[in-house]
Image 1 (tube, protein in one colour):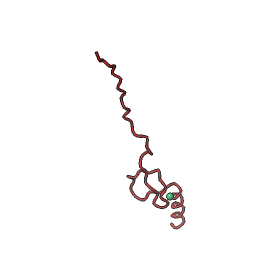
Image 2 (tube, protein in one colour):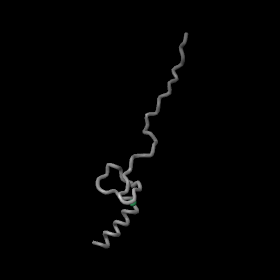
Image 3 (tube, rainbow, N blue to C red):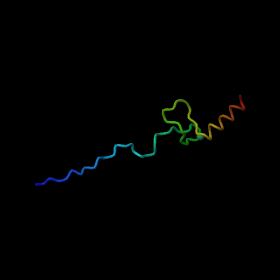
Image 4 (cartoon, rainbow, N blue to C red):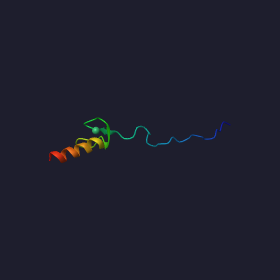
Length: 60
Ligand SMILES: [Zn+2]
C-alpha cells in the first residue's frame, strides 16, 4: 500500500514583504513621502513640507 503521510505544508498567505505600500513622491524633490499614493493634493516630504511652511509663514 502506498499510503504516504500527508505532509503538505500550507503556504503562508501573508502579505508580501516587498517594499511596503507605495508612497507618493514629494512633488518638489521626488523623495518618497510618508503619504500613500492615494493621498490627495501635493505631497511633500518632511523636509520640503518644513521649508514650505517657513516660506508661507514669511510671505503670508
Ligand atoms: Zn521633498
